[in-house]
Length: 82
Length: 210
Length: 266
Image (cartoon, each protein chain N blue to C red):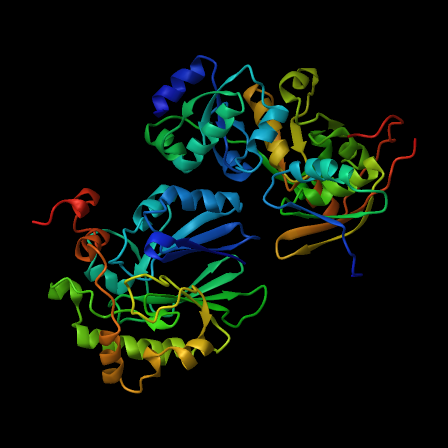
C-alpha cells in the first residue's frame, strides 16, 4: 500500500449510512483541485457507497482499506470543468 | 408509555418507530413498526432526510435511556413524538401483545432465488447507476412513503441498500402498508464481495450531484 | 479493540468500556452510579456497541455502584467472583478464577486477587487482533498506580468481612506480588482509583495508567520484602476512611436500599 499524504481528514466514524458519503460530499467542496481527502468510516455500507460517489462526482477514489473495524478511503478532488 | 397506551395510539394512526438495529427488528417487532436505527450523532439529519413530518411517532428503542434521548432529538428536530414504549419489546410481550417478523435473506439466498423476487434498491440513484443487482429497480430511501405506491409486483419484494440500514427502513414501511417485503441482510457490499453480477446504468448527462 | 476509561473526578474513580468493533459488543467494568447507568448505555451506543455484560472487580465501599441497574436495564449478566455469593443479598452471575470471556476478538481473563476485599478480581485484557499476549490488566483496588488498595475497610461483621485486617494485608501482598507481578512487564495497569481517592494511600498517583514493569520497580508498598513490612507501610501511609463507607458498602452488598445510605445513622 503506497503512502498517501492526505490534505484533509474527515472523521465519519460511528455515522450510519449514508452519512459518511453525505459528509464527504460537503467536505470536498472546501478542497482545491488535486487535494486529497482521507475519510474514516465504520459503516460497512461505505464500501459500496464511496466508489459510486467518486464515480458520480468525478473525484478519484485512490484506494481504500480496513484497519481494525474502521474503513479508510483516500479521495482526490477533481475539479469539474465547465 | 405502557404497551396498552401504545396500542391505542397506533389505533389512532400513530407510527411506532423501532430504533433497534435491523437484525433484532426483523426477528420480531411491534406490528406495523417502522425500523429507523438509532445513532445519536446523525439521527436528526437522517430523520430530516426521510421521515414524514406529518405523522405522529412513538419510539421503541432499547434500553429506555436510548428511547428518551431519541425522543429528545426527534422532538427538537420538529417531529411530533408522543412518547416511548417503556420496557421495550419485553414489556410488550409480557402483556401478551402480538409481534410480527420480517423475512430476512442473505445475498446467497437471493442469488439462488433471484427470479422469484422483485429486487428494489433503496440507495441514491447515482449509487444504483454505478452498479445494481440485475433486474432491480431504484426506490430512494428518502421517498418510500409516497413512491412505494407506484410499485406493483406479483412477486415478493426484496429490499437492498449498501448494507441493510436504509433497506430495513424501506422494507418496514412497505410491510406496514401490507406489502410482501423481505430484507436482504448484507446488501450490495456482500453482493459485490461475492463477485455476483452487477448491471450498470448509463450516467445521466446533467450537472453532477451536490 | 475499543477501550474507554471513564473518570469520575470527584471520587477519583475510573470505570471502563471494553469492546470489539467487529462484533459490535462491549462490556462495562465497575460502573459508578454518580455517572449513571444511562451514560454508559449512551457511550456504548455512540460507539455502535451493544452492552453484553457488566463486570465488577469487587464490591465497592467508597462509591455507589450502578452495576445492578446497568445489567438489568440491558438484560445482561452482572458478573462478580463466585466468592461474592456468600456476601451479597442479590442474584448475580459468578465467574471463577482464570475464567475467560470473549467479546468478539477481545479476551478477558479473570485473576482472583483478594486482599483489599475477599472477592476482589483483576481482569487481564487480550486483543487477539494484535497479539495473543496480554495487553492490559484492570486491577480494581488491588494495585494502584504508585500504591495499593487498603486492607482496613471492614464492616465489623465477621461473616461479611471474612478476613481481618492483618490477613487482608498479607493476602493483598501475595495477590499483587505472585499474581499481578507475574504478568509480562509490558502489560498496562488500569486501576479503579487514582490521585485523591481514599481507597489507597498517600502515594497514589494522579495518573490513571501504568505498567507492570514500572509498578514492580517504583511502587513503594510493593518494594517491601515481607508481608509484615508491607502491612506496616500501608498502615502508615493510609488516608482517612472514605465517607460513609459502611453504608455505601451495605448498599452495594444489597443489604440496604439506596435511600438508606443517606439516612441518619441509627
